[in-house]
Amino acid sequence: MTELISSKTALTAGKTVFNVLKSAYQTRQQERVNSFFRCVDTRYAHMTEDEQLKLNQTINSEDGRNVLANYVDAITQTSSDRVRMAIALLYCNDADLSFSDIDQRIFINGVIGITDHMVDFFLVAINQKIISGNYPYNRHVIHQYDLPSFPMNDIDGEVVYAYTNDLVRRRLLLPDPAVGILTDESGWFVGFGSSRKSKQMALLLNKANEYLQISNIKGKEQNEVSR
Image (cartoon, rainbow, N blue to C red; front, side):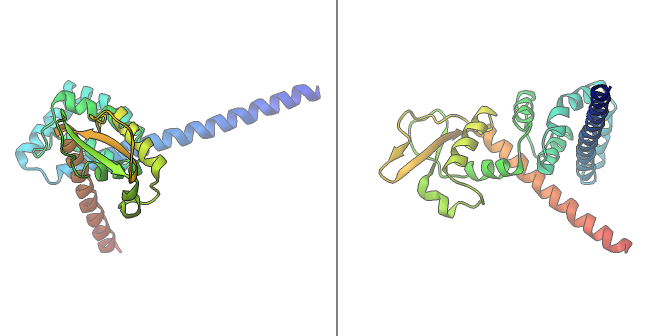
């Protein structure tokens, strides 16, 4: 009887924990979806009337709903508001951006689960000096001696290697187009490539950051007025 009671107690406790975790997960997912729509609202506020009309037509169309469904994983599986703002800019067909359907799919798939720290690294890496040579696309390297002046916190050789490989896997960066060793007389280095698409994705993320800053400033002003 004691064993039966203990089993029932454990089962009840297990259900309670499951319900708590389920509720926490659903709450977080809903918060991220709400964050995305706030990003859409931010971009909408800076559109012309014609652009707003086109967006409203998209939102109310089956194609618009299908596009949004394709974005759901990226929207809900990243902690980065900047990434959600970038997705919102794509959804709003921002006039400054030129993304084909394939480019959009690459970006959306590439940012699923990405963190702000990795986004920061990507934006720094894409601006590393281009190495001259006969390569099919731009080549960059990060040297060991670059780390002391690297404009980010919590960066070491392991992070550089791991992030670079992950960004290549995500297709935000390209593999190193040069074949060779990863050391020279000045220490180790990690090579990688970039293309027009890589630069375009960096531009999108930078623009997303600008809109977030505008949104935050307006939010603070509204809070001060309401006091």
